[in-house]
Amino acid sequence: MDPDEAGPGAPVSLEQLWAGWRRAYVEAASAAERTGTDDGCVFCRIAASGPPDAGNGVVWRGELVYAVLNAYPYANGHLLVTPERHLGDLDELTPAESGALWQATTAAVRAITTAYGPDGVNMGANLGRAAGAGIPAHLHLHVVPRWSGDTNFMTSVAGVRVMPESLTASWERLHAAWPRG
Ligand SMILES: [Zn+2]
Image (cartoon, rainbow, N blue to C red; front, side, top):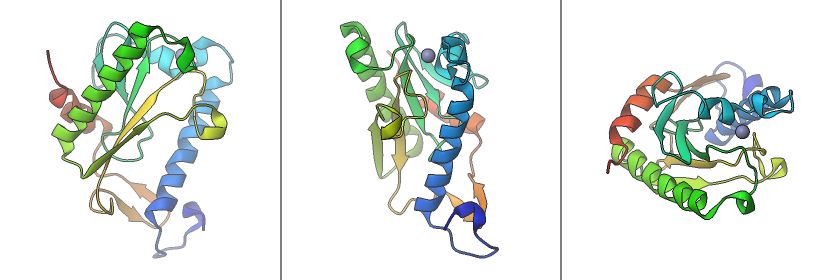
């Protein structure tokens, strides 16, 4: 059953809701990529968007990598950690970038844990469109808080995807919780 086709009152499973978000994410990415240049890359645009603030969604920025809220989150607090440079393969990372990416991912897990106190965290990357990457040309790691059952954090109404927290609220929580020093 497609969640968008669920009738009023029909139960929609979490799996179906997540599939819907993933589709929206991929569709948005494909639209952004249509120009076929770095100018069409949302991660490059965010990389050039200045210091962290709720407007650009950047929670933390280092010299080589940054962490940004996923505009199409699978769960509240869903972060993406990505290099500043436009590259798609792990092999293209310099040792410094690779180290910075891992350090920032570690910090992202800590920030999510501090801000949300989840039961668990998913982190990882989809390499290539066949693996589910919405934007395969610009490497990024997902860090997603998870709860047992996940239903106490997201509310579903048939055909409507409801998330109780705005991206601005997520940004404020994670920016405050990001480990310093
Ligand atoms: Zn890019």
